[in-house]
Amino acid sequence: MFGRQQVRTVHITTDGIVLRERAVEEYDSVLTLLTKERGVITAYARGAKKPRGVLRVPGELLSYSCFVLFENKGKYSVDKADLNSLFMGVRGDVEKLSLASYFCQLTAELAPHEEPALDYLRLLLNSLYLLDRGKRSCGFVKAVYELRLMTMAGYMPNLVACTGCGCFESDVVYFLPQSASIACGACIQNYPENQIRVPLSRTVLAAMRHILYAESEKLFSFTAPKEQLMDLNEITQHYVMTQIEKRLETLDFYLSMQI
Image 1 (cartoon, rainbow, N blue to C red):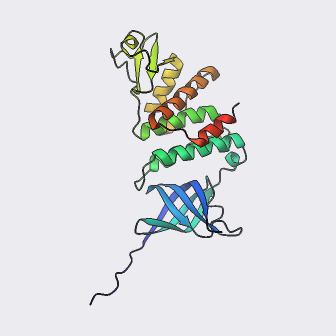
Image 2: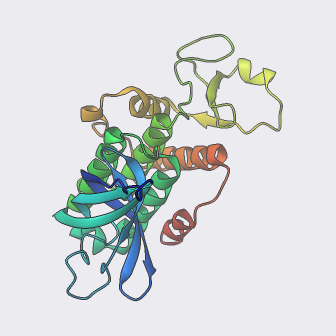
C-alpha cells in the first residue's frame, strides 16, 4: 500500500523588482516580478494589500527587494521580502512614473521567463536609478532602454554596415525597422518604395551603435543634441512597435504626457 505522495516545496531567495501588481481577494496580490535567478515570474503575495502588512510596500510597483519565495508545482508565493529601494524620485513624478510603467510592461513582454535574467534586471535598475536621481532626461533613458532591451531579447538590428554594399559610413543612411538593418543612399533604391525607411544622421547612427555594442558600464555614457535625441526616440519607439507587433497602453499613456 502506497502512502500519500509528499509535496515538494522549494525555498528560493532572489533579488527582484515588481513589474506589475494585481489585487485579488480583499488583501492579496498577484505580483509579476523580474528576478535575478528566475527571470519573469508570477508570485502570490498574501496580505500584500493590508494597510500594515509586511508585504504592502515590497508588493508595490517598482519596489526592489530581496524576495523569499516558495515554489510548489511551478507556482510561486512570497514568504517575505526585504526592501532595497522604492525609487521615490520616480514615484513622485507622473512623467517618470508613466515611463517606468512602460519599461515594466515592455520588460514583462521581452525578458526571459523562468531563466536567469541578471542583465535585464541590471538594465532596468540602472535606468530607474538615472530617472530617480534626475541624472538623465526621460527621453534619453527611454531611447537607450528600448533599443538595448530589444537587443538583449533577440531583436538586435544590424547596424554594422549597409546590408547591400557593406559600407560602414555613407553621406546618406537609412534605417529599415522591418528588416532591422541599414542601407546607404545608393542601395536603398533596391528596396520596395512602400518599405518604411528612416533617414539617419551621423549622430543618431553613432548613438544607436553605441547602445547596441557598448559595455553595460558605459551604456549611458554618451550625449546627443536635443533634436537628434528626439529623432532617436522616435526611431527606437517605432522599432519596438514594429518588432513586437502590438501597442502597449503604458506607452500610450506616457506619450499622452508629452502633448
